[in-house]
Length: 192
Ligand code: URA
Ligand code: SF4
Image 1 (cartoon, rainbow, N blue to C red):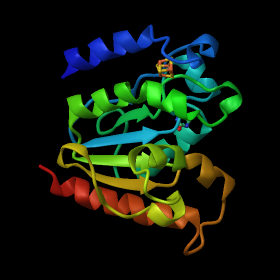
Image 2: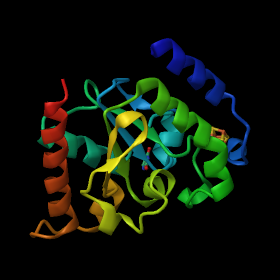
Image 3: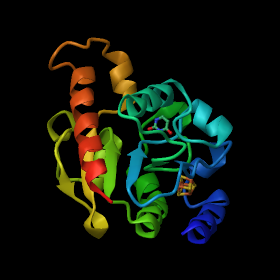
Image 4: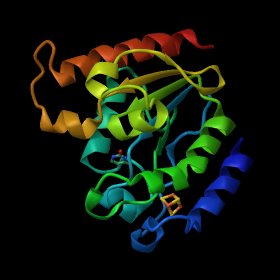
């Protein structure tokens, strides 16, 4: 598993399949821990991710770590983290369809090698990639979908969205995220 991932990672590190290769500092292949239980697919590297070559290391990433910690999960031991595309789009614009298409093979390889039981689809960009027939994260979040290799996929809000919505009231995005992470942990604990 590690050898296969490392091979794809080394190919990806030199990838010039789309225009984003010209503006990136680092390719951001993955973070967390390779495992066959839990994978999270985010959007794209931002400023700090591009600088450090690690996913979710900025403010959104810190919130993500806190959310996992609420249910006793951590990226050091439980979660494999990757993004829909591996290079930062200039000014954090949304990835273009041709960039997503070009990068898709790396994401597919990550899924195929790890065969995670649970895949978290974090935000609208990942949702459009993994579940193109769903219409928006607000409707799709919190539901289980059948995913590749017999996985269960759950769309969840992106932590950047939670950072822009501070309320914790019942029905607010943060409150909904709390429901979702508890459900995710419940199913996670059922996997041996
Ligand atoms: N947002 C993402 O979707 N991915 C990252 O790696 C960082 C921020
Ligand atoms: Fe290659 Fe993906 Fe980076 Fe484009 S975004 S250069 S396809 S690794």
